[in-house]
Length: 206
Image (cartoon, rainbow, N blue to C red; front, side, top):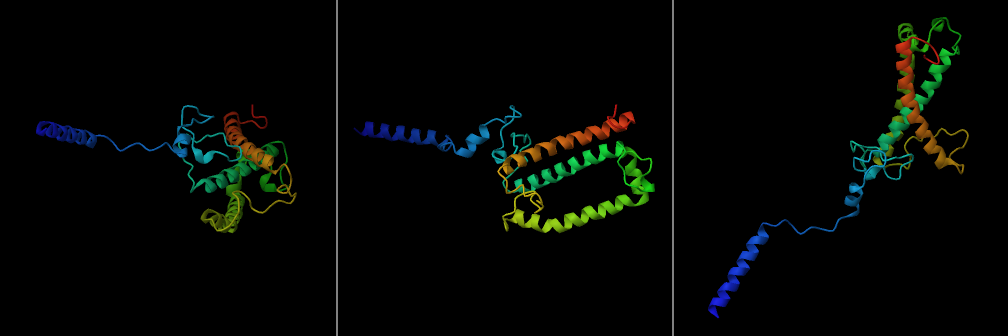
């Protein structure tokens, strides 16, 4: 009986020693872990960033996992601003090359490609910079309050809606269209600038 008791104690000691080398008991896999295991629909070889799910026009494209819950509003705001600027820039660039220019001697004979240096030399570009800086200064306050969670403002909403699109039934669809057209315009403007510089020709730049 003493031998049996000693043997049981020895086996129990060995069992406890073995458990000491084991990792902690695994916990049930949570929802966030399951989402992180999902693959991006636009880049299937990388994981899907769950922060991008449910956003307007989101295709899960965030291969560097840059979006976080704390910065996503800022990133949406930045994308909308750049997209809107690019849409205006594409229209303006093509319009100038088609002959639509302001009746000003400083702009006579310029193309969109040559206008930049000429506007810097004449001082018009500095005025544009001041105007853009003024707009950014006036709107930064509400943007900061949005990022801090002190207001219910949505990213990109500057309160400018003269046609009352926000009250329409197609508002959600229009938000998707704006983002998609903005992304296309950003790519298009880069292509137009490059093609105009390489060929030296006006619209359609070949």
